[in-house]
Amino acid sequence: MRALILVDLQNDFVEGGALPVPGGREVIGPTNRLQPQFDLVVATQDWHPPGHESFVTQHPGHAVGDVIDLNGLPQVLWPVHCVQDTPGADFVRGLDRARWDAVFQKGTDPSVDSYSGFFDNGRRRATGLGEYFAGRGVTDVYILGLATDYCVKFTALDARGLGFRTHVIADACRGVDLEPGDVDAALVAMRGVGVMLVTEADVLAKGEGGA
Ligand code: VGL
Ligand code: ZN
Image (cartoon, rainbow, N blue to C red; front, side, top):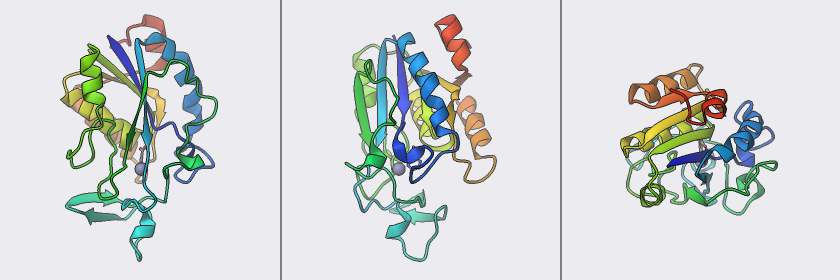
């Protein structure tokens, strides 16, 4: 049983949004081509309350990209983004949503950020995605979306940690690269725990995701 996770394909993460990931819109085409290859398709949605503590506006004197201690965890400060019920939090237009089985929202607790689609950054709460997959007999998880060095990375590490054969469709992801090299480091970190890096062509050609 193969599942595809579409990570944070939201307006604020593409060109014109509050926290634009360079080339973010380029993953929409691949996403629409890849979805029919999977038994199950789910999406994650960054879904912050207005005063989320990852927002730079909550920390006067700090700049975007600063790293602070937030309730015991290192926290990168971000522009205000993906606020619940705002257009920036909506899914990008042009995405084919006909085959989506479920949406898992994250980042709803103002006191802790949540990059992974499975757990918050402190692993205090689960989103339910792990149980959802387990209950449906998922063995193989494929991941694409935004951003390679944050939400894709931590979703992949957690999928692997939960025991799923985990594949990241690398050319259907784009990263922030807040520091140059962050995306490459994220790919190395994912491979290091056994996440398989594949391409759109691998998945479309073999129907099995390649390596
Ligand atoms: C993300 C930063 C803050 C992501 C979400 O989707 O990668 N990055 N919130
Ligand atoms: Zn966020």
